[in-house]
Length: 448
Image (cartoon, rainbow, N blue to C red):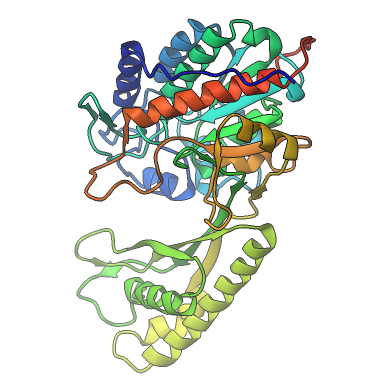
């Protein structure tokens, strides 16, 4: 086996910084998920015609593809999933509704696949997955020559641009890189557990033996990823005048009680409780409302067990509410009917988790000088879950920055030095993978 070439980091060039700032300033459609789409459909800041920034993901991806083309990466896919690909139980109902009711929804969330070299078997292919979307309402974009700030600087556009710098450096060290291996770059539409972007791309065959998902891991590779189920507790009722106190449904009181009850009952479980909404209009006592629960899990069995635990805890909370509030004026009807008017709806459930293993490729990462994520530290969620079960592959999360911003840091940001280090790591990884392959290659006849 050929030795891994020594490569000295040259850092991002001014043209890279220009591209990064352009991407950060181009509004992309926010990550799609059940809660975001429910708010958007109700008239939130990203709803059609709501007056917020107009998503221009297509323009951002075209600019990125043009920069990649100068390095020899060809565009092999650029488009949105077909509606039929989203007619599945693991797609949140609110996302399916958005697809059906909002013209242009899918067009605003395309995915892009770029390729260096011809299409080859997965055994001789490295795939890197990055995202350009960002949450609305993030801090403004700025760059002081050392630190870049803006939505996606740490986990989106920042590593995406540094990835191109790393490929450029690898090509400078090994000009025939594309004759030895194939490099795929996925710019996937995000959110909803990857069902709009990563999952369709993986199912179309845009994967490699080594799959790297850019994530804020502090430049340590993590071969695990969790998933999460999302539940909505919905109280059904009617809206009545606020000055009427006889027999109305008090959704806010019921849901507020359930939020506190569940926080106590599920205190030993990683359940996130939030999104309580009721009474959207002044002068109206809401007869309905909802509460959102998110249940992260590290294996499928634990996820199913958590769902049963939550459903049992909700039933217990309703029974307690019925007992505690039955005799209170104005709450008797709510207490008496709480079980009938409250439902647990699963916005998303049954997602796979990732626990990837491939001893030979793990040793390759070590030879490339990449540090492993400590086994005792917990994993986190990622679209990488859709590569779970792929045979003879290794999938890792790897990228600059950390999931938690530094104390006192306003908004998402990343030091340029960290992006330089990520580009360095990408170059070492690609040249190490190429060195591990044979000197001959046979291109396939398809792009998938």
